[in-house]
View 1 (cartoon, rainbow, N blue to C red):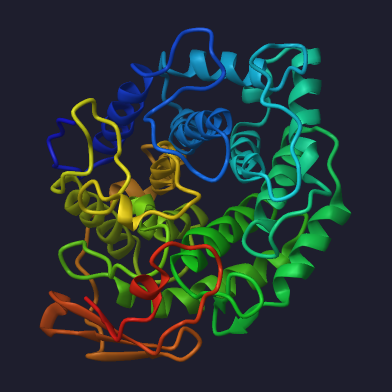
View 2 (cartoon, rainbow, N blue to C red; view 1 turned 90 degrees about the vertical axis):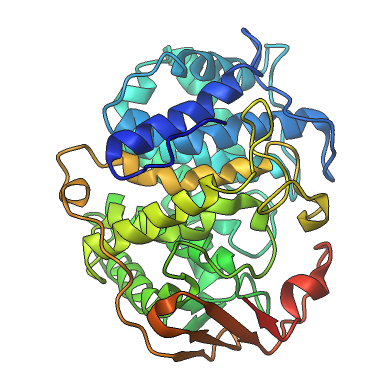
Length: 402
């Protein structure tokens, strides 16, 4: 995919996400509720995988629209949502079951409702709104992994509440209570009881937590304050995962989500969290994206490939379908901030001066920075993970990651 690789302004970010969505649009047949991006498979059906690819594009589209941008690309997605949530449509996305991948994808729709509220609902008739609510509401009492998945249900309820649809406060309380059981302290969680401490803590727990704390602070001020304070503590550690030129330490699973490695910092900007300066946060995000755009991560049609710094299926988990990499678009949450927002007005700043060594006891890691943070090395004590992740030993139990 061609790009100027400049990325110094909000307009450049708008152009980048628009280019990525335009590439998807060429694979998106008119009048369909899902689209295919490849022929590799995941542990769920092709129909669900194709719905996943469409849904993950919304992590870029909804913040773009919420920030005031107009795009002709949105029409197809709105039409697809109407079909996908209509039980009488041949494009219906179907009834969900326990541990269903479709539950994961519902969080994007919760974000859209939470950010755009009436503006999004206005695209749907009363009957279509009822269909949307009923389809998403399947997550309320759904059986799912005791992990960051609990936040998907919270995001849906947050969207319902902010859009004026019926919502379940008890469901929100129940999910937060479950996740409290694996809070480790100092801003760190594990991804379920005794489970990994990896990029999911940043791109899931704190990412969704800061969205909740920002959009629901008035109604839930005590929890919002806790979530913000934990994110502030976590940020003091997590900044050590970044190198001066934009790279991040490759560690753990789901690295095919790529830009999502710094989605946390987009949430920090969105939440106006009092940690570091906006210029430092802006620099982390923009340098990271510039680094990625210098890697061969797109195919000839401009589609994000499965892999890491190049197409590489051995990097993938069994839950990675051809559309999975588009969770990378979570980094574009900052586009919900309009052009006039102070974040876009400040100058990009380099990383602050960081200590040569930073111990992360809750993660079992020591991060080492060379002079001016041009090289970062992680020493890892190893995380035993017995789930179905592929090549777990390489992702979690090597002594050093650089």
